[in-house]
Length: 176
Image 1 (cartoon, rainbow, N blue to C red):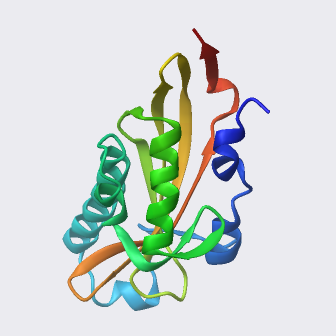
Image 2: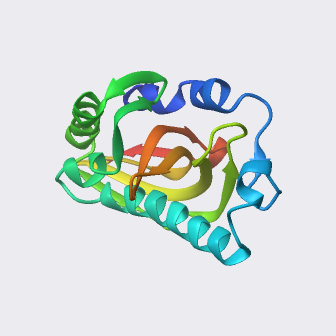
């Protein structure tokens, strides 16, 4: 199959089904737990922080050190449909880097942020970005929609879930 190296990316988004269910609330919506202890400025700062973490995670995929990406992951993470440790997820990242040694990622376009109901300090960030991957004479490009679930606490923010899906007809594969 043409996109076999991306079988993990093409996997159905179990992340959303398991962690989010069908009821995700927009961050701007009032939540009984957050409305009492967060001002509009606090919400804005948290939103910026969460989106920044996802942007940095995507951007870190351009460097050759897989720890650049894995440092954003929690010790246990739901990674592309599988419950893994950070070290196991790092091995998956290494596999992607071997398959596609040259990687270029664009900025996340119009990220969306949602607070997870009944999960204090857990949020979902989604967004679309462009990618260009190459391996000698093989090239893959297009857009991907990333979904990250993040947890804030103990002075840090970690990704506890990550999944991606290629965007429709945007994918282009060619061989020189």
